Image 1 (cartoon, rainbow, N blue to C red):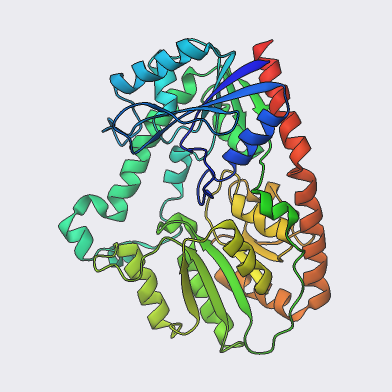
Image 2 (cartoon, one colour):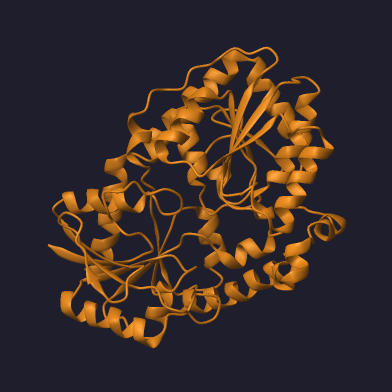
Length: 414
């Protein structure tokens, strides 16, 4: 049996994992159940010393979260030595490193990993930097300067983009050092090939969280003046495009005065020291008289996300960049008719006018028109729903995901 050592941000446990990386645990469990590999996980957590905390038959070490160098991307020598010691103990056939945004790729880049290594691309910081402002004008960016930015100038959007750019330069140096890289979309591969033309590239697939495979198919709900919409707001950053969506809602309100948009995410409307961009969003809401139309749900687990999706008429994904977009995959497999911006890897997940409706990222009027079409046209909405669900059931099929990952491991090891 091949030993695969994972380095990732996820602590495997019985507790439901929400947010980023939530699909990694079910993938690890299914790979372990295949009988072809032994999964061993190294992650970090709130602990004073290294602890062994196995999850079922998956061996797991949790190392302390320490102060990290340079924007949290470079592991300390102490952390590197701890990981190297565990690697020496388990003697893996392959080390699978998940993502470049945190410390894990730096452990390999600094020469502490001796086994063959596979880098799986999650987000791409250097690519996000190019789209960071999300189409905001210069005056909009100025309007995002408030008390928090005055007290802490490094939190202005200009400086946040600059930091993204610097983190992206570190990320590029990591990518250049890997021989084996897996990617979730052709868009990602396009970004990488000019950076590291000597690497071997492996297309991989994404496993969704368990409940999304078994949940009931969405059903059309007729509405007159009170359609219900849903969108994800994973972070208060411009490239997620929430400001564009709010503009689309202001257009739709003229036709549907009682329209409701539920925003799922981490924007804390009760925070006394909100960041400037969040305040900018609240100003947009107030200026367009949307106070009764926009509802923040806060972070949601998979059960709550499915419940919201089942009750809405349309899901909207307004991001200006995505390396894959798990939110789009999840909305499609539940069967929600989805309106999505034509950006990053998202056009690879669905066919326009067959499985979803796409619009130019900045074109909020077309976004609003697409939403209205799906609210009004039951037959069309149900067609997109059926086609989108069928596509995700095929592309995110559990067996296909597992077999693809096992083939990648075998190809590299042998």
